[in-house]
Length: 603
Image (cartoon, rainbow, N blue to C red; front, top):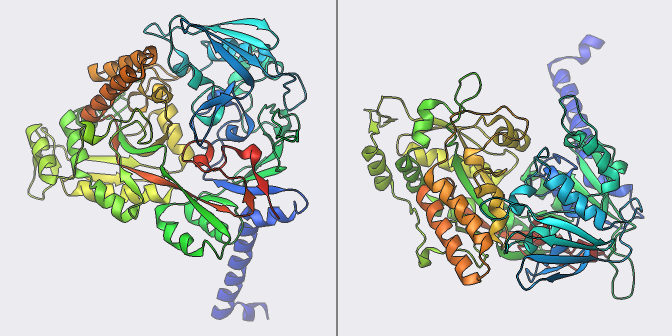
């Protein structure tokens, strides 16, 4: 009897049943609608992200979106609609006439999520003990280095509610650095919860803080000051945020904010899957990729959701070559020496730029829902230099690309394959994050485009976590396709353009505690961009600041540390049951929830 069951048809039937059961289990474990059933009596909405959080310690964050959009605030905040800096933890601030002293006055009775008072001591702790601490490798340092010497501000406690920042010289972007998770700026951290970790030492003598509040930390131990705290984290599935009962905001009637009790941040590693979950009402909010726009637009009324268009996204998508000439302790170069010569040849990078058909990329992959990008400064920023204002562009031209390569000493063999002067076949690897379907398609087109000038691209989409590890830690990469989130203030990119910046990825210095490199070089144009970013931060006249940042854009387009591609439109679909949405391309999660504390859910 048993052997009869496993006939050819029977074996396939049993296998089919097992596959169905497995798929049902997998979908149920990841489906937010199943989680919704457990919270029928709790007001909540569900959104998504493409990967697991890397840290619960805001000082070490280098990704976007991140959990701190929900949990953390700074002294000020950025209004997503007006782009104006507004009070947050600080109810007011006063700037001296010489622009070198700023006094922040905190709100009365501020509390952390555990009920402990939030005072000036926490502000001083965040800056002096964490940001200014040489043993703590936080990108926040890059935003607060003032002048050519990179001097940090000094802080003075005036009272439990008042802190004075004393600057060595006027520093134009200072207020922008205080806006918490709205941009790449400082969020205040709790002294009472973290001070011991700075005093305690790990095995190698480094502060215990370096490993404090990793994603393996029990959520109850993560103390925050934002509208939500972390209630639970299930790797590869979701982060659940619970309303912070001690959050400071109140509405005009004196009711405590936020209104919604819980937010579920579903981890969905495929943009296709996130759209499926949104269409099946498993998600309340989803960012729309160009390939899904038409489908969702047809379903807008029937599905009871609204598609918001905020104009060009505050995001730059690009490819970048690893220009690092450094060598490791064992003498091995960071980048293969033959390929490093190609990458560091300006004509090679410019030829690549001419060979990528960005207009076809915009038309086919983005369905026309975006614009060709030529600058590291966002199109919506007042500091953006347009091609009409003289910014160099690289319109698709294969003949120009080939001419540049031939003049630089490259040749073609009988198979039309590109060779360098020593006869080496020009071939390199390109990586991007596999979770982003649009970027995967962009990489495929780049591979095809570059084959037309004889270059073989070994294209390998990998997980986002693996990609960021290569960029930040191992430095083991040749060319990557990625995007940076930005804002209206150019200094938000200081960690990218300062030569020792934490995201100076095209020529990255090892982080604190990592193996040092020998022989690393800084190109003159690279040093000049860094100098100009410092100069731009020193200039208070906006017209003069614009010209300084215009110079940086001319240099970046001439020397191409990043070859910018396409900036998509900021498109988001939001269930109509979520009320109070004030949509903007600027702000948290693409601008949908920058005012998350005001949102309501109509069941």
